[in-house]
Image 1 (cartoon, helix red, strand yellow):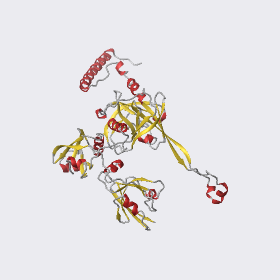
Image 2 (cartoon, rainbow, N blue to C red; image 1 turned 90 degrees about the vertical axis):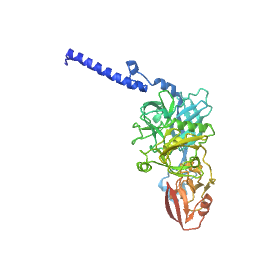
Image 3 (tube, one colour; image 1 turned 45 degrees about the horizontal axis):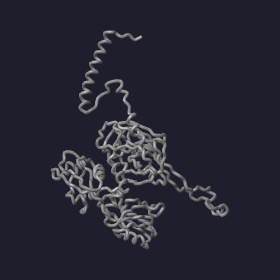
Length: 481
């Protein structure tokens, strides 16, 4: 049996009380300055997220996407022999069969008219989309808008009722690292699930998810099926759409999840409501990150902002007064750290009006206004499908213009003929062509238009020499006819 000295116990209680009082005083003094404090009673320790969940969960839905795919039937090897096929061949024997593929994700009702936002990868290629509400009501849904660059899509419920629950937006820019958030979705198809966590990071641009990458990072558990679900703050407002996770083999959450910020979501939803097409502002320039070496060369105290490395003479950037060598450090008062954060800030401004850039030039700060206008289609894209017998057969190509480059996520200053599609099982597909490739030359002839490429593909030659540019690097491919 353990015995304790009463005097020692009394002194211990006094010491503990003094320590707790001191800690409470320090915590109270620091937290009050920030609007936070430690729990002051057992009742406060029993605080719950339930009111936030009750206010937001009804607007989070399940999204079911169905795709019809053709699957080639496998025949026993005996039927490869023409002799046996003479006796057993029959209509439909070995013909492709239609098979249904189902995809499951989540979505958020953001408008009482029945608009639902989800991830593009949830409904990509879908022939039919159905949405199931938390109260089990089910609706067919029309795809209003798909934006691969942001991985967002907007659906509209058919015959939407007037009593649809919705979630209001809140600014993701108001989030701070350490803020509490809830992730709501349907992981693994088990049913609506709520997980809690904190904001682990903001303005995360190096996640490698899409080319408009600018994410909220959270440790709230996000799993397959959560894609398209809601990330909400403690006021019950939508701050992001859950879109991806870092995971080990097996695909489960390890506490590193990413959400698309509400500003980008609102921009895409507004595009869907205003005609169903995303129009991003045209910048008209090339940017690169500022490394420590570049910062030292420019006389900067630290790497900051993005360096203007190229300009289109007719573009808004040049027309607004930007110069090659300028360093852009802020867009409309928001600091930027790399080209991805610049693209996010500039794109979410939408079309119309101006954007004000803070620029460093010759050691001095300047304020430059850039017009927010849509990228032009100049020259006309003149899309063509190459059919002539050649390694180019199966290519769908277009003339590069600022709008085509923007659609493909390419450098706006590029010119020439770009691949916008490749027919499956075509000679071009077997040759390794991909959308975004630029065809620079065919058999020594420079290619400057789709018309010129189509004519060059009709040449009667035994050996084909193709010069192709991908990601800024040129490669010469040789094929025997």
